[in-house]
Image 1 (cartoon, helix red, strand yellow):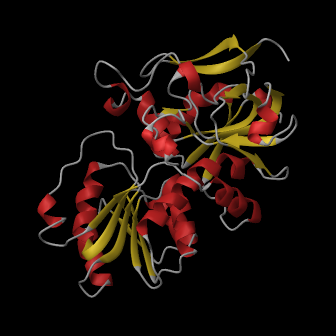
Image 2: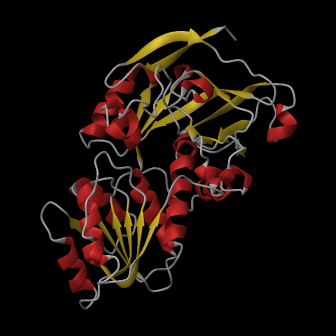
Length: 360
C-alpha cells in the first residue's frame, strides 16, 4: 500500500474536492479498511447544500476539512495492536462500523445508549476522530462498533446496512401491531427500506406518501397498499377515507420536509403514534394542541440504528430486504458530484460510490 490515497474532501458548503491525501494508519485498537463501497445519503446532499443544521452558529457541527461518508463497508487491510481481539476481525475480513464513534465516557454511553452519545462524533462530519468513507481507505477508531460482513454480500446490499439499521430502529419505535394502518411519509432510500421492514410486522394496511410518482411506483412494487402524491392530494383526507374517518394507527416521517409534520399530525388517529426520523433542513412548526388536547398522541423520535446492525446484515444477506430497487446509481468516487446532483434533482434514490477503482 502507498502512503497516500484519493479522497473527496469537504472544505465547506458546495466546496467538495477530490484530492490526494495521506492514507490512514491503524493505531492501538484501530482498524483500517480498503473501502469497497460508500453511499451518498440525503443528509450528505443537505450538508453539501449548506443546511443550517450542519453549518449554523459559531460552532458548526461539521468540522471541515473532513472526508464525508457515513454509509460504507470494506476489507480489513491493517489492524493496530489489540484491534483484532477488541473488534473480532482479521486482515482480509469484510467489515463495517456503525456510523457513530461513541466517546464511551458520557452518561449515555455508560448506560448503553451509545447512539445518543453526548459528544456525538459521526463518521464523515468531524475530521479529528471521524473521517468518512468517500476515500480509498478509512480508519475505524478504538471505540467503533465493528461488525463482520459475509464474504458473498453484494455491494449494493453492503452499502445499505447502515440505512437499513436506521429503518429497523424507526419501525421498532413505532411499535407497529398486527392489523395496524401505517402511513409512511417518504419513498426515498430510508422510506423504501422502512416499507420492507414494516411488512415483517404484519400491519393491515400501508400507505406511502411522496412528491415523486416514480418513487411511489417503486413503493407499490415493494408492497405498499396505497400511495399518495403530496403535491396533488390531501394526505389527511385520503387517510381518513381509507380508515373510516379514524386516521392512521402509526405515522412514520422519513422525509425531513417540515410540511410532513403537519400532515402526520392531521393523518394520525386519536391515541395514535407518530415517529419522526427525518433530518430537517429547516424548522418545522405545528399546532401542538393536536398532540395533547385533541388527540393525546405518542410522538417519538428515531435516531441512527442502535443494536440493529446484525439484523440488517442478516436481512440483506438472506434477501429478506431487497437492495436492488433502492440503490439506483453506481458511480466511481471521482463522480461523487454527479451523485449529489442526482439526489438533489430527485433522480436517484441511493447512490453508491466505489473507491479504489472498483476493486475490493
